[in-house]
Length: 260
Length: 279
Image (cartoon, rainbow over all chains, first blue to last red):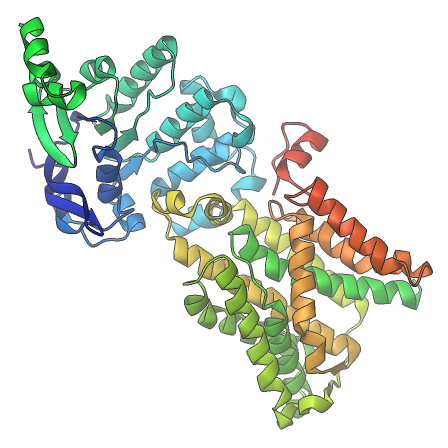
């Protein structure tokens, strides 16, 4: 099947600093891919290049076969991608349910959806839909609370729900499990599996290898802005270059011996 | 109703419309210090059509509003390339340019001012202001309003959900300019005399100030802000020397105690219980 998302030799420099070098990636529809690597490897930058936060310095990005390299961020979103952020970026002055309704935007672009006074119609279908999404995530009781009052774990989950309700073809999660305890992580795993069971492709940046291994069928490893390995999680975990990137020079031989 | 009270209500209604002119961009995170410039355009266009062509009053008001709306849309594009304090300066410059042009325009009296023929009384002004409030409440309740408030909080993240941020900002700024034009047109026909000095930087500054003090999170903030700024000087009129001192102290107190404005969503939620949906 044709790829949903293709990155073809993408590079990004900030001045003389090469943050991403000649990075290629393909995401098939409905597949689940993990993007891992040490801190500062450029994982979030890859997300920012895909979603159009920064323009690329070189290379091409295709979504569903169309070249989106030169499109502005909001147009790329309309090609069916939604994301969450490493550092939470909910709208603090909006309520939880309003944040979710913002996530629905991709599905609500007809003019009457834009013009309907949703705030004055307590039972409109968009709000019901948003509340249902909150309920499914076990967050219904926070629906009307303003976001800046909510605890970190709840905000983290809200971001995931907001990205999920976009109905995107590609869901991009930036460290969804960061700062969660083991119980919350289990819930999150089940939640993400539920969200992507309908054929949504998943691209997830995550540090916790156990989490990635259980969620993703394929893993791409970044180090200093370059792809150093790609494959099934268990293969990648044994790759000497990956071990070196994570544990330092010399660690690879010892750890590989342990693994063997 | 006494003439005094009617006079205050008319002033309050005009201030309220002007407040929404500043509020709509502010709710989407833009600071407009050129409200008086848009107000002047509305006032002079409406007055000119009235005096020179004798058009019916409603038509004059409509034309004044339309003129400032169009001007708002035209200058929104260059101005919205700037942000933060640069946008404040750009809008300030716009207001000064309008004043500079008008004062040299002999067709509308130049520095001598311009007498306006048709009169509009307080009830009509108040009714239009009430319609303005309803329109803003409606705008904020739509997805467009949701996009505005999202942009206020995080422009980049809003764009990543597929919202054309620039279009939303231009529209918010343009509709705001229309409100200022209507306020100006009403001002001219109510006082039957306009001069450039009526629409100076001081007015823009005060309006921005009372919108920020009222709060930019809900449609009710400007209502409270405009009420404070229109009515308080009258309440304090008894102590002639001290009223500006008391006024200043109150403003500083609001800034210190309620930095997000008098009316906040959090405050409304506490006042009316969690169920309330603020406009």
